[in-house]
Image (tube, rainbow, N blue to C red; front, side, top):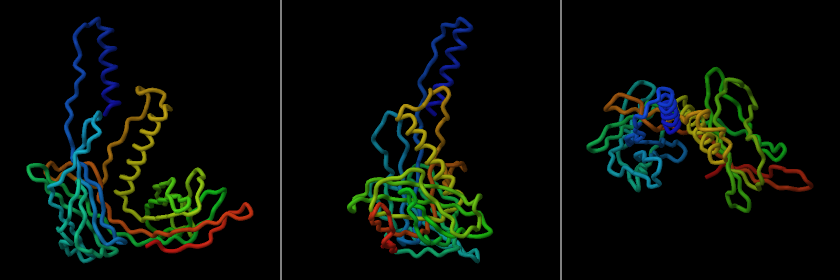
Length: 293
């Protein structure tokens, strides 16, 4: 929105100069807060978590958490039967977590409905809980971890890969990859790897099999992150010619107004492994792989 505002102001000023107009142009734009909801039902941790907050003006650093929302998690099984999973959530600073242990079922659909007193109601588009895609192995090539797995055949699949780097058990860096399988559909021994190498002696690797809407949401978040990094690092050639940031939209709907809302609620299933690395004789070898708790 900041870039659009800049461009509009620029064009108005140019038009005024060409027409020799001295009329004052108002530059104030009214800020309208929006509800932002993000989270997921997690089959590995057997719980549902989400955060609810309002957007704040660009010059504000104080988050505006929503603390009084009513949250209900629903499911639909393969036979089309719909039921309530839980509406029992604890809340702290806008972070909601299911109190009861839940056990999501692969193939079932899951979604939330959120009611905020004196405000709009929201719901997420149902997502199907995917099967875990196991991490088969990891190779280290030029000090870059290569995560190897078998892609699911005959369907479009979407993946989120997270790698956390440790030295002496302290996390020092991380990488994230969001990708679809259009180029390697059904391939055995498919691999994903980050673009740059980093120092480490332990890796925490998580491969998540996600739905299409969550994939698009994560792609939007990644694009926004890159946009901010470019501006911070001073690589942007100028506001007028830069790409405008994307809205962080996913599968959330404003049910009151029947329109897209900010945020995403995912059905999450993943394989997580810890890889211990030993450096010896200038070679890096994987000593052990074990399922993370």
